[in-house]
Image 1 (cartoon, one colour):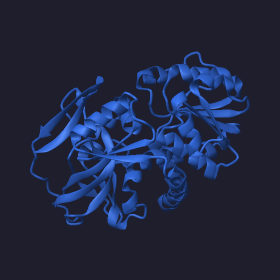
Image 2 (cartoon, rainbow, N blue to C red; image 1 turned 180 degrees about the vertical axis):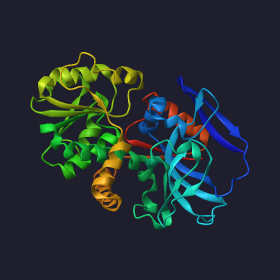
Image 3 (cartoon, helix red, strand yellow; image 1 turned 30 degrees about the vertical axis):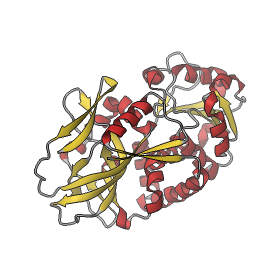
Length: 360
């Protein structure tokens, strides 16, 4: 029997741990034993906007239920694909579960794509699995950091790429909400490295101010109750919080000085729906939702996958140095622990200095 954590799509804090009978492996398919994955605010975002962006479609569940996608490592335990051997390890998009069957296609020395039919309408970025034996990003000593920061960091990298491609919309600073979140930290690191002329302003809860300041990734750190202290001047905002009231305050404080308003993710779940509709009656630019896979495709078209990979790898190494010591990796065993970690993350109860890794 395999195990999965199911989440009610219309009640994200309703979950159940279920057993799923193993089916005979299809011809050409590979069965993965899931070794580890991280649980972060990114996974909560997948659940919150799962219907709108198809995140529930990757790993099917009974009607009304869904399986939240995770990023992690897995080992091949059965193979009916001649190109993939039993015992090989991979990294990629996985369910909150103990096993996953995939159908490898477009196989190369370093990766393959899952060609399972129901996954083809979704972004190909999520269907790609790296083969660790030939993966230049793989560091056995940093697997935890890769799961916790990797996908979030790449989103931050792509936001900076998008902003820089648009000359930062004429701005001289970027205002980043949920500054303690891992995606925000990744963005701040890439801006510091690749757009050093852009000042980085981090907004966070009062309890996280010291943590955010200690990261060294921001020029200015303000608590949410001090938004009115934002310095006037041409700015862009990147909102990871999804809090409609906070977004409105940023718009009203900066007024015409706000040149672009970018919405990413959802760390304040109860406000996400309102946050996505917060453009109604707001001064300044209309908030625009950022969908990272679309910008990844644009980057690959502009510079090619190999060069894009090199740029990301360089920025990733820089970020790892900056983030060293900022996160205490907590390893937990079992899918019950995964279910609990998901619920605590959903409820905003996870200390930003802790990174959760689950070993099913």
